[in-house]
Length: 182
Image (cartoon, rainbow, N blue to C red; front, side, top):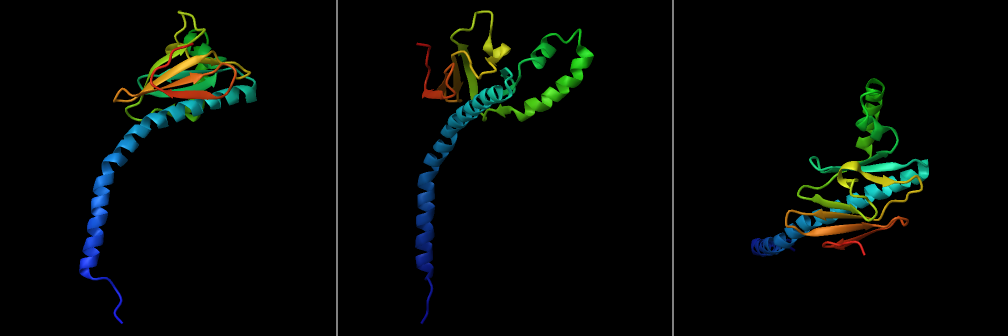
């Protein structure tokens, strides 16, 4: 009894596999590229949820910052680091070592957005015109409360996802496209 496959059977099976791979590559490529926007929004949601949980757990206010040149977000304790960056003249030597420690902390609580994904806008419902959340950061109270905030992420094809952060609830709503405050 001879068992095995003939050369013809192997060629037919390998050609069917090649044809099915060739047909599935465009849709696979689209799902990988399109998924970058969803990945970026999941990372942002995770960072915000983590900062709110840390604020509640440690009973210390947190600030969430965004660096547009590096496309990174991070959070840190609201007290010392904000003063250290704004008022480095009178306590420069003492704050210098603390800032080094805070940079280490920042690296542990930071995310980098996927390639091609950017944050177009961060808007707060109650933020005054003098406060820019893109530069000044988002405030998380020690109870985990935040102002009602909208964060819009956009990819290279101008598709966008908007994250709506509710003030008192820990859930964050993600919707396709742009959303404004009610």
